[in-house]
Length: 124
Image (cartoon, rainbow, N blue to C red):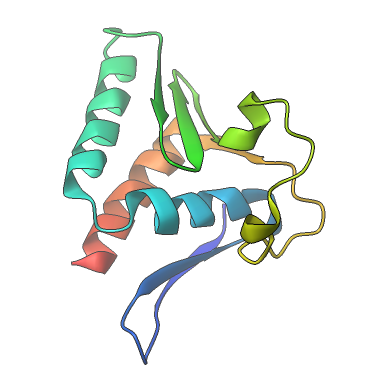
């Protein structure tokens, strides 16, 4: 998984650029996680719960995206995927740069854990 974190020089807002197959993860980081320490803690706890066997999977539903943490993988899906919505509302099209947007990205659990720690370090 290739990514880069950037601070906008004008606004100072943190953003994330990901390879095309992982674009949803970048959008999720910016929209759902941002600087929310409580959500970061919730995600790290979910990873720990799955790794230690306390839970087989943990789903965390946000405003626009949901995260499914499983033993080996993490899936980030746009919530429209759960509503049988074929198209995103026009107001969301501005944020999507990939014409082949499928609403879902996956990565390994270890990669996701490292991503969260890197993002937390970057935004602080």
